[in-house]
Image 1: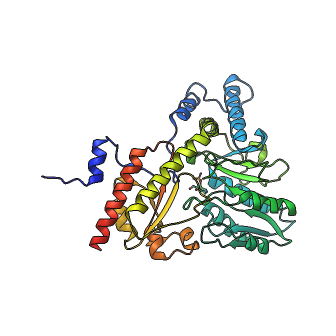
Image 2: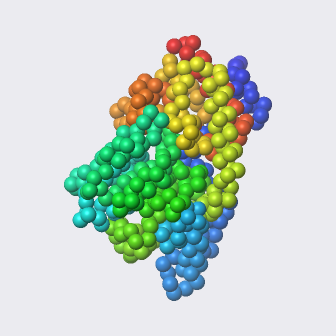
Image 3: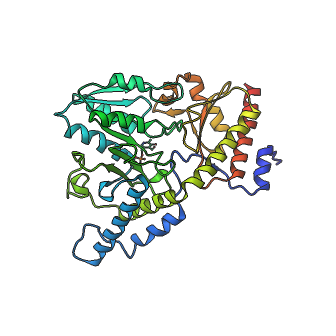
Length: 397
Ligand SMILES: Cc1ncc(COP(=O)(O)O)c(C=O)c1O
């Protein structure tokens, strides 16, 4: 049997690239080996419950949790006691939004968010609408940024909470959260940000940026899945959404996931130390991929903001092809498309549609998420494969 290799495939075999190539770091990241190393003892010799006060097993676990709390707080400019551990950003978003709604109901029943938020935010808001809250879903500009004038118009005397994400998971668009948060602070409105994609990637400071609540996700910053945190500014009263033993100042009961928390702490430390160099390296890789594709192909559009963007994000639409056939042909590259499979059919991404992109183009979009472990050789391979695949599909189609 004779096999023919495309130029990109030949290049992969010449450079010993391991396929498939993972370029989906917005979906999740690999656990950093340094993170795993710190976690491992907390599965074995230090297996204690951090809430056990009477013996050294508990004390060792509690010490590890305390250290992690302070590492996470340092990354975002918070105090350790303002960090509440959760199972991830979905839970943090739910706790922030529903917790504020329940606690501050007597002050008002109006919430502001944006149409491009993650479902963890949107569906929490939808749930609250069933309980009598009013929610304003702000539309966004073509570059994905919230229109600040529309935001100002949406505010009213019943607004208790504004929740706007720090960076979008599809387009990488980085919102002007400091500006929005300042306007909230001036009016005594609580500001929450879902920073699942932003923490550890871009500088954030809850103090300098006037953030009251901030959701963190472990598995987007090289810590494991199933761990996250919510920053809760001291003085903010959140109604617990999970009741029980009163852990985490009563805001989130349940035995702490000590190994996961240790991992999250270490991951935050690594991100803090390496952020300037890492973001420069990753954005250079992203620009390299973007430029190679744009230089070789027509009919390619960039989605999201050029200036306000996560370093590792590239989101592109390709005219003249179908999204599904594109992904099928790129079977040696792990990326995401601008479409999501629901039970019955393929739906174009609501985020891309909100930017004014047609259904057809949204479906023919790819999200590349470049991360810590990607190399220049991988990016070159992916660029080559995308270019040759697009040319082939367009010739056929
Ligand atoms: C912006 C954003 N918010 C929330 C989540 C949910 O995070 P988790 O998987 O930790 O529940 C994600 C992950 O996809 C995300 O990208």
